[in-house]
Length: 248
Image 1 (cartoon, rainbow, N blue to C red):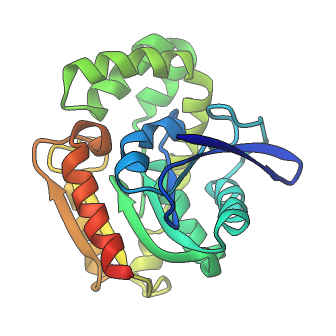
Image 2: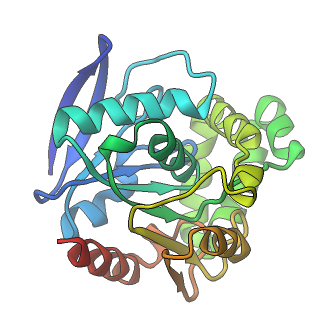
Image 3: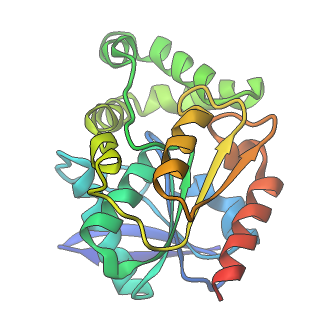
């Protein structure tokens, strides 16, 4: 797997590259591009380290739209336009890219995400006061697989500061009314993927998006939690590959 370093507004933005494919993967809160290694190997495309994550440069991020700006610029530099795959926070970023930079979007795959992403106030408070305790709580909600939850609780504890930033941004993200009143009309092919046991962005979040994006395809993956691409990579990759190949 190749690592490419892009320059966006004088900031270093690293991207992992798999097989040649016009796909851009956007990770969720407190994660980085390595979240998508199994997808890069099997399906192909590029996965970005958002600013302040992984090996990316630090940047002042005040809104989901700020992340969308950097990803859209990266897509334009790499391939011009792509299938934008976003998980959780990354799904919010993907929606903002579609709304603000539609020319770089060939299609959307919204994974374990929603039109609104409220976060428990207790988690935000704990991340500042007792980061290890907060990290365990987030991991418990994020995985149905206990061993993966243990591994990620350590990772999240180490990244408590950026996790707090990301979850705060998620908490303020809200497109519900814009979907309900028809202000948002998604007219690119769209895939919704969600784990059956997702406790952070439950199936009803994807059902709301399906209701307001009638042409969307929705796949619920059995026995998977929020981190569906890690817990059920084969099922996830099959759904994504089928979707992407039908776009050809």
